[in-house]
Image 1 (cartoon, rainbow, N blue to C red):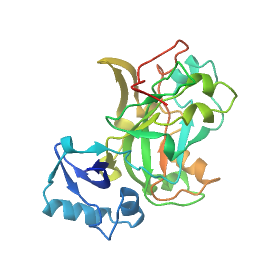
Image 2: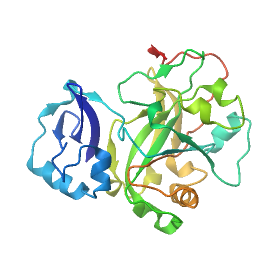
Image 3: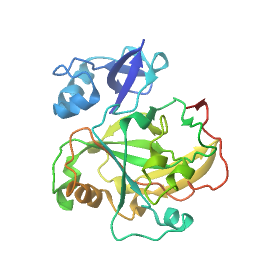
Image 4: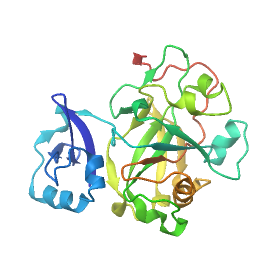
Length: 262
């Protein structure tokens, strides 16, 4: 089951997509107006039942996608979480995860332009798996962490490299407007019994630029959820972006995504 957030005639909505049509769930399950509210209300099962009885009436060609969770409370990102990416950056594997935050305003959506800012001539793609939290909590044990996940999605966590390298902190290069592409949809965690069997790729004009298995993460998802929770409580609808493979680091000028300039 694929949950999406979208605009129809300028109105923000959410629903379930089969790839061709969307069942509009907006306001129909305990009054939830967003996918985040549906998750907070713990109403996924009700949404599943509603979707079984009601056919999709909105064609996907009639909508504009929004980020899967347009308004997460926080987007926690992980840097240097694949060995090949660590090597290409000239860094070393750290004892603890490299954690930084994205702001919701930095996001864009599936089929929407990623925007290169006016202050830069470079913008690098970074394919990553996104984890959407269902149950919140603090001091979560690794052995219990997977129970807190409601779903998974894709994230192109694009980076303005010059600004990332202004200091040892990653934040500024990771938070320009419309540089974090989130989507197209959320797949329920119950439909992916073992995420480590999945692969992740970036393709540019049909060419594979990045490719890895999720089993290659240096810090796996349970340990990341647990580690972050020791400092920051997880809330329903929060997003964990788990790191990018090798092949997403370029020193030369790039212009792959500058359909818009901010």
